[in-house]
Amino acid sequence: MDLIEKIKNNEILDLVLKANKLTSKNHSNIITLERAIFLSWWCDKGDCSFCYMSTQKNKIKDPKKAKRKINAILAESELCNRLNWNIEFLSGGYKSFSQEEIKNIATDIYNITKSPVWLNTGITNDLELFSEEIAGITGAVETANPVFHEKVAPSKSLEDISNMLFNAKDLGFKKAITIILGLGETVEDIEYLIDFISKHDIDRVIFYSLNPHPQTEYENSSQPSSLYYAGVVSSIRIKFPKIEIICGTWEDNLANIGILILSGANGLTKFPLFKMFGTKYGKRVEEEVKFTGRSLKGTFTDYNKLGENKSSYNKNLDKFIERYIKQAKNQKNKTI
Image 1 (tube, one colour):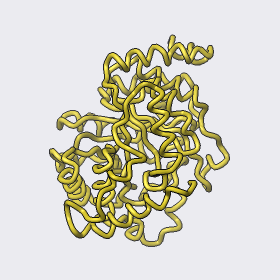
Image 2 (cartoon, one colour; image 1 turned 180 degrees about the horizontal axis):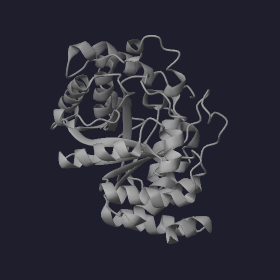
Image 3 (tube, rainbow, N blue to C red; image 1 turned 120 degrees about the vertical axis):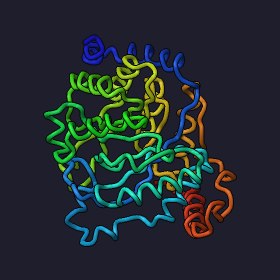
């Protein structure tokens, strides 16, 4: 495949230039800030080799204590809405919340933001429960190579993810997948990814770079190189000009942002919102977007957007709103 050969031959900048033109032609000039909202820090499966939750299963005696307070989740959603951030999806470990509870949370968020929310809450075929509060369903593919997938995510079979995505399509929901780069995949695995996207008519791809968590087998691994990351993203943009691409990078790799946008990213994710707000790191995100010639939806620096310490949705959220705003304002003179 020509795309793979170009990456192998270090012709990645050629791919980036082509991808950038296709993005400009098929998408708006807006780059979104995306926030994954976590529901819980515990997972019933807990065996994905890269995942922080795999280190928690034997430590947490009562999984209920790992569940976030629903009012805290809703307060975070309200602040994201104030700051004009998109909610990337709701995310939680398996069996942390029931489907009915997730629906209720999604409905509240829909009422707060006036936008339907994406789900990334595990493999399920009980999607008939959901309605207008849901924009789409996300399958945590991580790697599309079926053999390698069994190694890194043994309890999340690609077949089960596929069935869920086909079901989502039948019900009229959009479909997304997450992909983690740096797990040990090869450049050739791009072919598997392209085939998966085509087969499932995927609307959105969310890329992350490996975050090596302590006590996992990747704790001593490094994150993937910026140009490899750009090469993969560019390849997907070239192959699928109209697909939505979200790219995640970490606060220690903010220099990735510019090249990822030029490679085809429509949105950015994986930032610790309240730890970075108003800091030099938040300002750096905005500057990276600026120098790509794009406009940023959302802010990392405008304190006025934080608003008052009261919820406009439910007074029971007030103490959480106040706490998050205080945390954001206290970061101004701190480093991460």
